[in-house]
Amino acid sequence: MNITGLICILLAQYLCGYGMLRLLKVQLAAVPAFCMSMITGIAIISLVPCILQLLHIEIIAKNTAIGIGLTSAIFSIPIIVFFKKPQFGKISLPQLYELPFIIVFLLFVIISSFRCFYFPPTPRDVLAGAELLAEFTVREKTMLNSVFDIDLRSTNNHFKSPFLTSMQVIYKLFVCPFGQVWLTTIFVPFLIMLYTILKERLHGLVACFLLLLYLAIPDMFAYSYIMLYDYSNMLFFFTGYYFLMQHLIHKRNTDFALSVLLLGIATYIRVETLVLIGFAALMPAFIYYKEKVPIKTILIKGAILMGVSVFFYVLCMNIFIANIVPVSLDTTGQLNKNLGDISVFFSRISSINELIIFSEKGILVYGYFIYMFIILVLLDLVLIRKFNKEARMALYGIAVVYFGLAFLGYLLPLFDILNTTKRGLFKLIPLIIIYMANSGLVMKISDYLKNRENRVEEKGPLKQVVAAPVQKVKKK
Amino acid sequence: MHFKINLTLVSVLLIVLFFNIPFYKNWLNTNLLGPSFDIFTLSKQMDLEQRKVNRFGYSYAVYQDFVKKLKQAKVADPVILLPSDAYMKAGKVKDFLIVEPAIFYYFTGIKCVLYDSPNVEKANCSIVSDGNGKVLLRKIANKVELESIISDFKKYK
Image 1 (spheres, each protein chain N blue to C red):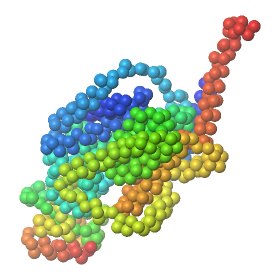
Image 2 (tube, rainbow over the protein chains, first blue to last red):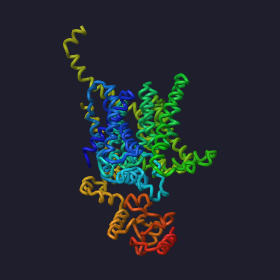
Image 3 (cartoon, helix red, strand yellow):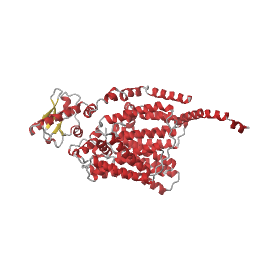
Image 4 (tube, rainbow over the protein chains, first blue to last red):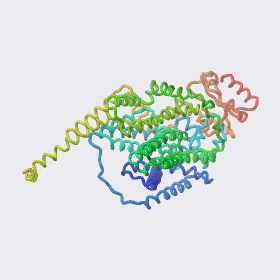
C-alpha cells in the first residue's frame, strides 16, 4: 500500500469536504466537522476522473493528481476566505465505562479496514460493473475502454453511478491495486459521527450500547468492507436526512444547505434515491405548514431540496453516464407497464416482511436489530406514550424508506427483494438508531444514569464547601 | 469514582452478555474471529494473486491457468467460447463456475463469448469438459468444429 498516496488523498478529501462546509457556513464542533468533511470530501474528489474523461484528458496518475490538487485548491478558497481562528474547546475524553465498548469498536474497525484492504472487490455487481470499468480505465487510461467491446448483455452495472468507478480509479492509481480502502475512510468518520450524535443525547453507556447494536448487524458490517453502492448511499441519505431534522428543530438554514447537498450526493450514488427524497420532502413541507411559514417559502425550500437532487440525477445519468458509457440505456422496458394495479405495491410490502424482515434470512442479515426496534416502539407506546420531535421525524424517515422501497419495487419490477431491497433497507438502520436515542424508555434509563453520575460527582465538592469557614460565616 | 467503576463493570457485563446471545456468539466466532478471516494468518499471504485465489476460489485459479496456456501457445487475439454451467455439471466437473463474459474479462483480460451470443463465430478457443470431471481449454481449428462444440453446448441449457 502506498501510504504517501493515501495521506495525500485523505488530505485532499478533508480539504474538499471542509471547504464545502465552510462554503455552506455550516457550524459544527471539531469532531463532527472533521467527520462530515471526510464524508462530503469523498463525493467531491470522486468527480475528478469523470471530469477528466469529459474533457478527453488521459486518466493517468499525473493528470488525476493535478485534477485532485486543483479541486482541493478551489475548495480551500472558502477555508481561507471564511477563516476563523480555531477555538480549541475542552477535549472530553471517553469515560472509564466507555472504554470496554471502545475496545470492541476498535476491534470492529480493525477487522473491517483490514478486510477492506486485503480482499479484492467481490460482489458480482461490481466485478461486472464499477470494478471492471475502473481496472480497465487504469490500464487503458480512459473510461471509454475495451470493456465496451465485450458482450455486456448479462449485466446493466455499467449504467450505474460512476461514483464507485471513480473512487476505484483514484485508489488504484495512488493507494493500492484493489482500491476499495476509500470505504474505510467514510466508514470510520461515519461511526464517530454516529457516536457523537448518540453522546449528545444519551449517557455514554447507553450511547455505546446503541452503537454496538449498530455495528453488530451482520450484513451492514459486511458492507463496510465489501464495496457496493448501498453503504455509501445509506451514509449520505442518513446524514442528509439527519441534517434536515436538525434544520427543522433548530431552524438553521446552514443545516438545510448541508442536508440538501448530502441528499443530492445520495441520489448521485443511487439515482432511485430521488423517489425517497420526494417522500422525505413532505416532512419539512408539513412542518412549515403547521408553523404557518408562508407558502412561497415552503415552495422555494421544496424546490431547492428536490432541485439539487434532480441536478445530481441529471449529472449522473445525462452528463456522466451518457458521455462515459458508449451504449444507450433503454429505461422504458424497466418500468412497470401496469401502474394501475396497485396490488403490486401491497404484495411488495408483504414480500419484504416475509422474505427479508420476519424470516430466518432477515435474522442472518440484520440480526435481532429490527425486532429490538419493534419491541422498543411498542414499549414506548404502552409505557411512555410520548414521542419527542426527533423521534417522530426518525419514525417518518423509517416509513419513507420502508414504503419508499416497496414503491420502487412497484415502479421497477427489476428492483428485486432479496438483493436490492435488502440492501436498500440499510437506510433504515441509522434512522432506527436515532429513534432509539430519542425513545422515551431509553431516555429514562439514560437520564437515570446521568442523574446518578452527577449526584455522585456533586457529593464530593459539596462536602468541602460545607466544611469551609466562609460558608459558616455566610450561614450565621 | 465507585459509581464509574460499577458502570465499567456493567459495560463489560453488557458486552459479554450480548456476545453470548447464540446468534451473535456464532457470528462473532465464525465471521469476525473465524479462522478463515484470521488477520495474522492472512497477513502472511500478501501476494496479490494469492489473495485473489483465496477470495474468488477454484474457478479463478483455473481461469488463470488458461491465461498461462494461451500465452505459452501464443494464440493471437484469443476469444474463448463459454459453455453453460449445466454442460459442466453434466461433464461431472465440480466446484467450477462459468462466469459471465464481463467477469471473465475482469479475471483474465481475455474476451469471451457465450455459446448463445450473436458474436459466437469470433471464438477461436473453448472451455470444454472431458466428461470425467476435468476442465480443458481447446483450440478451435475451423467453423465446423466450432458449430459442433456449440451444438454440444446447446444440449445442456
